[in-house]
Length: 459
Image (cartoon, rainbow, N blue to C red; front, side, top):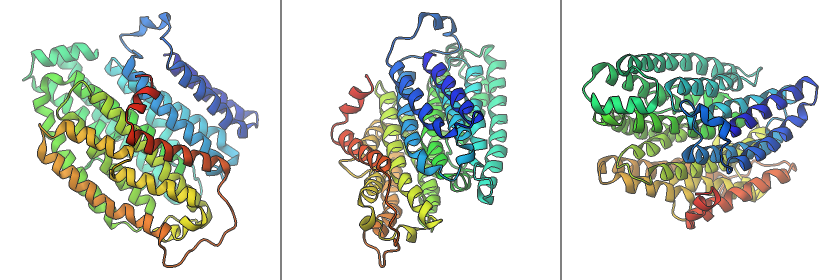
């Protein structure tokens, strides 16, 4: 809970920096607070917080996913100076809302109770409804905010109804008492219906098809830095909560929901990859790419073993790093060109080779090409699932092969253009180059030496 308090106080400080017209310092306040929180996440939890263990337990798994989320958020804050250059009047609010949303993520990593789960989901989501509409003069951003809010409220209704049914049948909100009830009452219809309704709500939060319909429009309409935050930190938080509630709370009725997830995986991988191929806008294509990755990650539910949590963390970290790598390139192109079509990237490899190489390696990692972190992440999850669900793994492999086609469109535009469209003398900032080098080194290093991931995060 110490980390949660530090991130919360950092958000308050960043917010009040804007009140005192020091908004430009909010980013530095956020970076400092996140660095402190990252350090504290390695320390033993204070004895005082043990009285809250029935609601909130910052255990080893929660600490691991919190560290990953903090690292990704830190990278986004480093990119914020350029990305939010047209939001100078309300930068502090944007940074503060990102930190408040991260607080919701930390709650989701540590929840022990369905009430805490609900609070975590809402704390995570409500700031995002505002952040999605941060480009106040852009109709797409306004649409993204309204659509996300309305669909999010609808999904919250499913979540609350599911919680009510689970509580009505088990008589408890406690995760482990629900676990015990599920094992003893495998045929309880009310309990099963509650679990399925919660599954649907969390499938929405992770943008799993067919509950993904909001994500392409929201990801495309939101400011690009906020889109990265939703694609990475929010997805990490939501998916771990999804994984935790299904594999602990509803273990006793696994047979009732596992086939539903299998069907959702097939729909997700087919729909997202086909729609990704059909896009002419790079940002929208990456939105569908993000949806497809939920299908790969969801294979973690099949063939559960002692390494499942580690494999999930590794994949989410590799995916999030790659997302930051390609989207930071898109941010720079979008600022210069005012568009994100494939043609906008033409010739970038000759003008800004560091940025282009980072985007290319990130896309190859997303596709699961060997020697990248993405390959190791997919290999671990596929290897875990292949014995219990060989057909789903085959579908996932075919989906990965299909995704290479639309990832290559950006790479081809950057390095092999018919005609370069970059005529500007403006150069990428030093901060962007440093972040780019970090991402390239990290993706290749943990791709070749995956044990580095465990060592760096204290496992």
